[in-house]
Amino acid sequence: MGEVDAAAMEPMWPEGASEEYVAARIGLAKAERTLRDQIEEVAAARRRMPAGLVLDDYTFAEGPADLGRPEPFRTTRLRELFGQHDTLVVYHLMFHPDDDEACPMCSLWVDGFQGVAHHLGQRTSFAVIAKAPLPKLRAWALRRGWDGLRLLSSHDTTFNADLHAERPNGDQRPMISVFTTEGDQVRHFYTLPANFLDDAQRGIDQLSPVWNILDLLPSGRGDWYAENHYAGRDRRA
Image 1 (cartoon, rainbow, N blue to C red):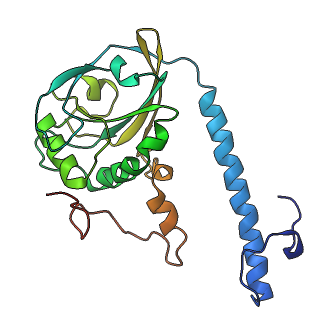
Image 2 (image 1 turned 180 degrees about the vertical axis):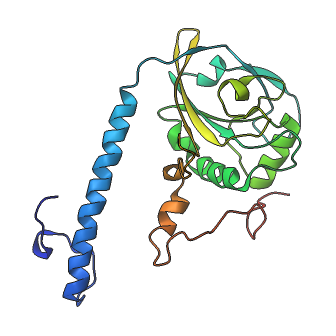
């Protein structure tokens, strides 16, 4: 931002704030602008990634758009998920086949995606894929109110393992992937897991407003962790 003083800024503080507060807020504004610029630089570097691997045309189990209808199930190819778009974003939902509900953090993320999916649909296709059998996935989605999301099961496929959304011991990994299409071919473009290469966490924090809003609080995000069953989470019986 360069040299900035209070008179040059649109005020971000109420009238009567102390000089100490104003000076601290200006310093913070500079840091926030630098962070914005760094985010844009990383996004530009991401767009410059070379062409990724051509993938198999995996098949998934999918049910009706109405989550209240248990059938019929159908087989859907990866290529079909693109629809009229040339890109596809997939959230790999952490939902082990033996579990009865998805990871609380993953559920939090998908709650957010459910609210913006119709906006994303203007630019890209979007789907949620989990290793859990389709009936379990749809039952959980019904409870969470994930209407309008495309939900598919990769059960009995190698999709999760091939994309490293599943560890060798069968544990599932939360992450998001972007794919591109060229004719009938599907290419992997980018994957962002919850952990970085050095296993540091918070890799996908920017994809949820929850953490960013908690970071605005005087207490910060603290050690808060999402749960599946606090009040208001079960939207449908």
